[in-house]
Structures are given as C-alpha cells and as structure tokens.
Amino acid sequence: MIKGNLGFKSCLLLGLSAAVLLCSVQQQVTATPTTTTTTNQETRPLTNLPPIEEPGPLLPYKEPSSVNKDQKASSVTPKLATQLVIKLSERRVYVYQKNQVLAKYPIAIGRTKWETPKGNFKVFHKERNPAWENPFTGKVISSGPDNPLGVAWIGFWSDGRNQIGFHGTPQENLVGQAVSHGCVRMRNKDVTALFEQVEIGTPVKVQQ
Image 1 (spheres, rainbow, N blue to C red):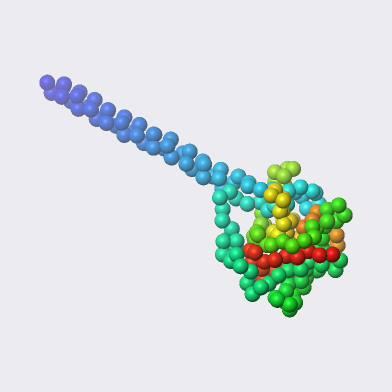
Image 2 (image 1 turned 90 degrees about the vertical axis):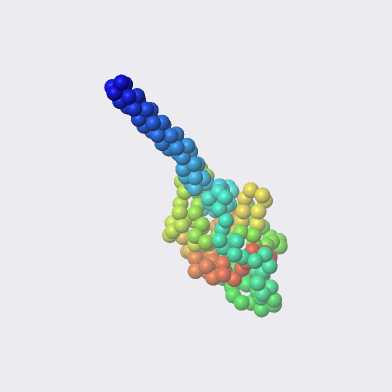
C-alpha cells in the first residue's frame, strides 16, 4: 500500500509538471506573433521617392500608422495670414504677411518637361528630417547629410499619388537653377527657416 501511494503521488506530480510546462509553451507561442507583427509594422515603408535626379513618386518615406508631430501640432488656419509666392523667373520664394515681404529665399525649380506647376495651392504636409526610400532599389536613406530631401519637407501639390513641395538638398550648389522634377529645392538653412514660417493650410502661389 505504501508503495502504491508513492507511485500515485509520483504520477500526480509528474502530470502537474507536464501541465505547467505545456501552458508555458502555449503562452510563448501565443506571444510570438504579436512581437513579430509589431516589428513588421515599424519597418514596412508606406511611401516612396525616386532618386534625386530620376522621375517618379515624390513622397517622403514614412512609417505606417504614424502621426507626424509637426503636422499634428499645426493649425489648419495659417498663422497671421502668411502666404508664399514662388516666382519661377526669379528662382525665389517670397514669404508674405498680408502685403509685407517677411523673407525671400533662392530656390531651384523644375527642369524642362518637369516644370514646377503654376497655380494656387496650400501646404498640406510638413515633416522634419524625412527618411527617403529609393523605389528602384528599395534602399532607405535615413535623415542626414546624404538624404536627397535635406532637413525638411513641405508638400503643397499632389495628384493623389505624387507630391511636389519644398525641401532641402545636399547639392546646395544647384540652388538657383532649373534642375528638379518639379520640386522646389532650397538650402537647408533656408528650408529650416521656411518650415517655421508656415502651417498646414498656408497658401502657396506659383507664378512665372
């Protein structure tokens, strides 16, 4: 009888140990997909941009489901009635507050057959230190001195897929020329200043 009780107790303890081990394995398996999904969401690109001298989608690389802090903090009403006027013939952008010129900056504009579109638009996208993905190679260039978008992006035109906007450039020697595929390139220090002067909704007029 004693041997039987010991055998029963041993079997019972062995069964409980197996149950605890099985629950632990199930919990680990259940937790794994959540971690993997989160990682994929953080690294999957949302939009693309072409190389700086190639045609294609003109959008900065963004993480999915992310809210841009600059865009979120901006008001939909332009502050103090500020507006931007791009004068293509002068290769300059003017910052107006009512009828007063607050600042003007040299720009590079679209080349032949890739002209910067003329008309009346509004700023709808702002982003500091944007990352950029080459759509042909899939290589992502993070913010830094080699990033084709420079230190900031200010989008004001879109056809639903592509964007055109102001951005910095590592090739500041080309500012003042018609070299882009529609975008308005600026020296990094100038686009940084412009970034602070506009809000989401600020009018942008592009004229010859």
